[in-house]
Image (tube, rainbow, N blue to C red; front, side):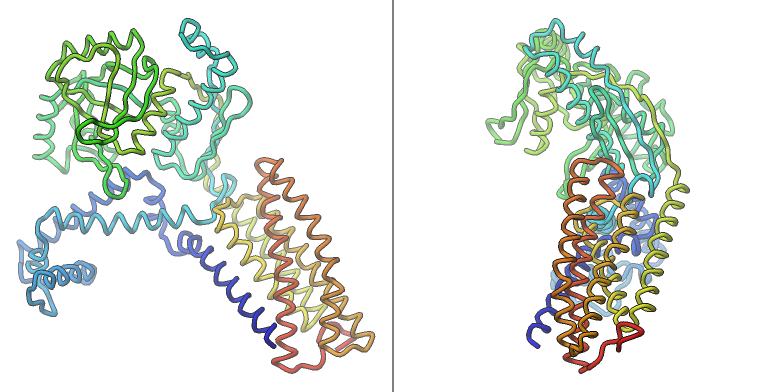
Length: 581
């Protein structure tokens, strides 16, 4: 009896743990609306802009209501805001009535900026929570979700030609290796920054890069990312144009930009200039736009002149800074530029975002430069970029293939149908052929699928058509264990054994036969998962997971059900065939 209870507790613990693992997938696919999924899959910058815009819209509506009728009451959609307002009033020692007017709610916040932070935080936290669900959920592969695969060719011969007269003492093979590593790193950084979900980026052969982007993606956008500009350059700031733009933006906050983020009136900045957002990291690690900067289109200095870089600290503030050394040409360019632009501003532009601005107080000759304004992690990332910034790798899109969402939906439907029909036919057969004992197999198979999906979710694995094929095969293989056990039990019954003895001997005699066959299958699946790629790997992983879960459900869950009926329900016979009962 104690053994049965212990096994029941183990089963409950396993199922509870699986539910915890599966919860993110349930929340993402079943509880998150499509619109919020699209927001969560966007970049952090887009999430920040969305939260800010929504917060401003809501605040404008509330202030408009307050101006029209200060004694009016907010609708039920703002109950959460009223609760925060009551809490603030209690902290200030004020008397709080059961119902607050809109004027009293606004009075509970110290400033409009504080209220804006509350609204923005609410939107941001919800989207980031959905993003967390996605990151911990089972992913759909390219063949199921649709998307794009791209093959990019790196022009390594141009890299070798450009470095013939350089002072680097590396072999051609080492140079090619460094060039491919940098190209892959840059592509990963660019694609991730645009919020494209879980890209697969890997080297293919000597000079090609394979990119797989699940989900909807526009070909033009992907090409612009791949062929994008260098990730770091220095520009001269047009201070007068920046001040003029900020004045214009303050007077026209709602119609300065269109829905795509482009200027509705490009003439408000000079033709030889570009407008970039000025970003800093906020408390959540998000890029927070704190303003705009107008910079000259002409690049003063790019990474090809940087020889080395290291992370240091400022002498006074002890904040992280990046110290880098320029080559002779770069030192001359930078020295001349700083000498002729004293008391003007210079911006560090990274992927079309101004990350730092500084006033040139004096000429900086010698090619030794220190830049600050970064966190430690940002400084370390920048150092890594600068160390290889001299290596420019020309990239070109060799081929790209777009898989439409309709194909993905068709594949999902066909895969789910195959899985459902296969499971249903097997369960019907087990119930018909093994009668009451077949119910044990039904429960074991349902729990088997439940555990499989939980493990996939726990390890953030991707489901593809080949993975579904592995699951279908697992269903057929998993029922074999039940068949072996049931046939052994039938043999024991034929020998006149009572129910408890027949069940115990049946499981004991079937144990090694089941373990031998599943261990060999598991070993084969593990080798396939390590040596195979793509569809083979997906099939092998799902098969390996299915082997483990099917052994657990067949030997542990099925045995528990039999023992429960014997010891708790006090059954004396076994409904396991049409001949023996």
